[in-house]
Image 1 (cartoon, helix red, strand yellow):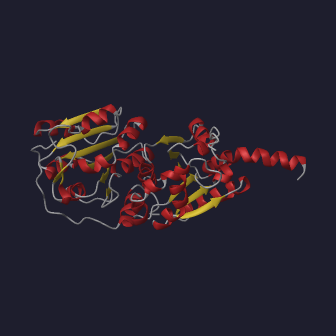
Image 2: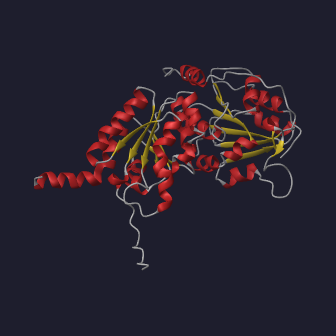
Image 3: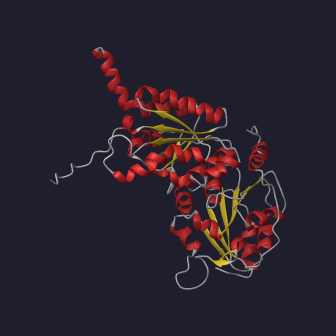
Length: 197
Length: 187
């Protein structure tokens, strides 16, 4: 599902009032987008482990039910971890939101079309999430719809939420946020008042 | 062996999953992601009946690697249950465990190694230790009922005390081979 929204603007807008939310980013552009919106010890950047962003966020949400947990990831990454929608639907962590940035492309590898690109047999990730029993699913294609979900984002209750955002297939400069995974997990744990290891 | 000892041994051959459950309780484990296996049937039932634990069925084992990492990031030790054939599904996701040095405890029921009737279980079953080894997951093995409790306890200490990634392989000799209807004599 290719759209017109700018991915950096979408992520920055959604994180404007993030408060204490814990943010997980899927590998590639989603990680750069989250970092571009501002680094925080409450950000956990994935640089690999493709298909794992939603599951990791689900585990985090189940462990910390009092905190809003948000995963930002790309459509290709989500397709690789499609089964995690089924698990999230079953477990239904009310504090979990998954934002899928969908440009119908594998932007990191040469902009090849993904299964979500428009056309015959296109996968509709919002419909998949809904069919997996996920309580709140929103499709965002315009600034107005973005403003609607940004108004009460991130939510700590009545989830899980999945937002599928149609973004433009525009490439932005790659940033280099924290790549040291052990440091990333230590700083998030410390931010949560836990021992680093 | 005295009659009394024989009775105790027979009981233990069935009740080792209860001992695993007790170890998990003693480590205050609340989250137990799993892909079902017959060898884990009793433990899964105990977990799902427990007020303090949450069994989390997965669609694939790699989900559980990521979910367990997230749980620990949030301060909860998770213990994952799977069958040997699921180990291969975890390989790339274990880069998350390794690069971030997340603790990990996986309890693997083994197939394809002791009286296995289904030859399709053998290829992955025989590659389990090598597959874990490729991704720096330590393997401990329990072959007999009396080894289970201490093996799982020491593995949990390595994982949640020491921060290691550890798998306990619960052998097919311990669990027993799955029973199939006898193959017809083809002579």
